[in-house]
Image 1 (cartoon, rainbow, N blue to C red):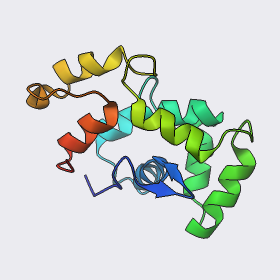
Image 2 (image 1 turned 180 degrees about the horizontal axis):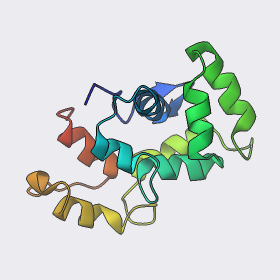
Image 3 (image 1 turned 135 degrees about the horizontal axis):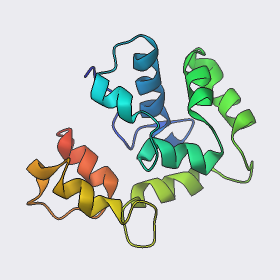
Image 4 (image 1 turned 120 degrees about the vertical axis):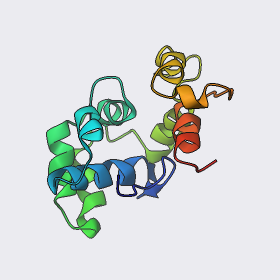
Length: 138
């Protein structure tokens, strides 16, 4: 897969947004590998958590990805639900995805045991840790 920003990369202060946009742009240009395309914004993944947190849809992200970078944050701030939700709110949730008491806690052990078997010997606490290890970032 062509490189995408790491999970903790930010755009306008929002973690995951540059990664999600990169994947959306690759999908639109038909360069996103089939296995990634199948999981793009799928239920239960980090993309879905981001969309749900901000009240956005897959179609909204595809619309957003078609915009030039300088228009992304103004669009995002205008269309994201609950203007009281901040980058700080999301970023706190994002870095804790998979921990007890946060979304994806029940999925993390399953993912490590199946899709990320090659990483099973490590003791991961969060989804971002798994992704970073899988992508050689940690």
